[in-house]
Length: 227
Length: 305
Image: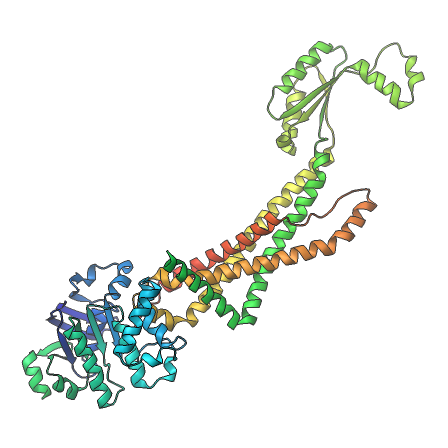
């Protein structure tokens, strides 16, 4: 589902975000990406979502070598994955319903299909009664759940989340992780970048640890390091 | 199909909603566009009116060939047939010397004096009328040169030179009008393009999020295209009102002035097809401005998360 082969990312200012990263995540797997700030976790997610392109190596997502995708093909590629961000990235002047519907609208889904799927997503994240509210009227936790609903409403086979629990209290963080696990159990591949080691320990899921732009510790050892 | 129409309707309403939320800036932009469209439209109407008024005179453009004394009427008739066969000639008319003398005798008041003449001093005459598409000064000059080449021709005279000059002036005005219209059209495109550019900058975050969830450039561009079309159409509508108002205000004074010169000249108000054409032109210019601007600027905006 996601494969990184000798991937490097170097910025024009000379900073190296990733040196030589390689890993593979299979369909339906839920994997945590851990590491200190600046280790390269977000860069990996950005490369997976084609928000950036690698300076070297190959990134394969959903069976497609992302370096071979033209600019015209990128929107269709992004519709095949859901993205959740720490700062939510919601449209403040649109209702919760409209924010969640956005991926379906850009995919030209029918009005009936949009309504059905948005209502299902709202139920899933427990915000069925907030459909008409503006994001600014919601708590941070609720805004994060709107972001999650938007990420999954198009039923993507891959979900990437960058610090999705960064602004949430422990209980809300656990709730969010439960939602991700449910997707994973339903066959969705989930890749979560997080600082929250307690949450990672609690989940018992596979961990990819990044340090200085490399996968530095094997999965099992990473779990031990976290523990 | 209905979903597709729904998306377009949504984009149109969204653009209209943004206009309503910023009425003053919208009104000023529309006013600038309207002024830019009013000038060529008004000038176009004026030129059209003058051209229509001079249309009857233009038919009076004739080239008269006075033949040498001794040229037979048969020879003149052959010249008339030769001229009629040439392109750009509407009609030819032979005026025999006898007929000319009779007319002169009848109309001049010198009948008695002419009666004492033993010989007709007038030559045979051929009147050549060029066709409508060959009445430009350059065409008339070429015709005059051709007719002057006949060895029997004594004098070739172009009548109504002033009509030619008027036509030349109108032709010049028409070209000036086209140039002005093209420049002001470019101005409209630039104004709308810049307005759309500013709106794109204002909505950068929204554009990034839309692209983040898979929105294509075409999808993101759509509401901006409607914005451009609305600006252009509203500007053209206001320009139409300004032109109609100017026609209404100027109609009476122009009629009085023309009448004082014995003319029936009137400023023609724009017709319904002309108004519809202006609206379509405004919308098209708006679409072009928005398309150029949106295509250029949206391609540079990519989600950075």
